[in-house]
Image (tube, rainbow, N blue to C red):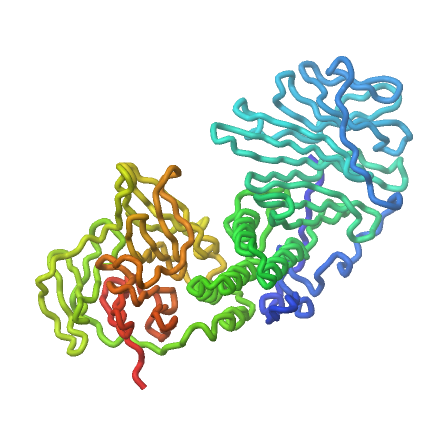
Length: 610
């Protein structure tokens, strides 16, 4: 099937692992290049083919100057089992037909040869074949075959044969398969030997195949990237969206006598440009800055095999980009845009998400500098640890904790409610009955309920289960934690999701996952989730167990490393050594006490006294 792609490149250096740069918002400087940044597959002291070790010397026919105009294959004329070649014609095997062909001198003997795409008469069993012209017509040489998973009856296929370089021919097959209409593109690359001595040229061969599943799409181009008179390959992968807006990245392969060799500068070079462009759009306050950054995170998750991506593969392996800056750049852009739009909770969530990356490249102080004047820092501690046990049984997402009208903490257990006096810490049985923890409302003739939230670690996602008219459905929610693969995070993936309810009204519910707020409603499209602002104090009263105080004046949001206490007077960020991973938090109307679950234990958090 042709020569293998080689990857005999040096291993990751310590300097590459330590690449660090502070990027000024106004300049968006790339940084790192002087410090030997990480590049996929391997790292050396260089970042491009221009500084790579020279290829082995070989006699190569010089490339004509100028770019190569792509030439599309043409269909056969007349009988589809024969194809005109030079003064004669060639015939394919019995039972097969020509779909498209490209005739040119591929062997250096001044005679036309033929690359063709052929199939069985029913359109199945596609093959890239080669016929050598001149003299007696030669038998066809099969260079490559369509993969079996794309050659089944439930797939429809469209194939395009084209010559993209002086010595490079590709066939690109777009397949749509199954009831789900899953789209896949498969590309086979045929190479012509261009040795200066035509008598020493080897027969054409298929050197590489590339396959991508939707939402990724791929294309291949040829160019002499390292000025060695050999045509190298550039594989461009694109994500979903309009062509001008879709995120993309390149893989480059140098043509070597022993096969193709990966350019170690890619895909990080193109991913780095993508990240810088996202930050630039956020700084310029472009309205699509957030959506583009979220699309970039989805793209990287699909594209990079070491981030869990399974959408792209080649016969020489798949792209790896675990230490790429683009993940942090994308989250940075989201945080920047959130701060610009006044969504301070999401900006803080972006900061904490970046802080949780193995490679944050110094972004945390940059992001936190955005909202530093808008958020008051408060040192806080766990002041009390009541012995009362909160119930964690049954459906629903409302907290088993709430503050009563006199400032006492009510803890709903499995059978009774315990009251904790905040001043003395005394715990007594309360006359209150355990409240419903179900988030639900009525819309027309439908009763809607929010049942639970779950996290999937690989590939990452956060989903909410909602019921309407007796049936349940799962909805993936685009929170920051659903974009970031576990492999690039410092901490082990926690499948628990802290979903806080802020209020319930006739239009639905306002909920929060960390610092990201959504309104959930019901309509013609079923249960929906849309980003929302914090409700005003005049909004309807919140139910027991909600993250908002009953009078609507204060709300608490639990982030992985801190608590956001949102008051009429402004936002406070409570931080302390023992405030990580708190959940199901509630707050007093005055905003001076917060109660949460730490695991299954109840804790009361207060600002640290000076």
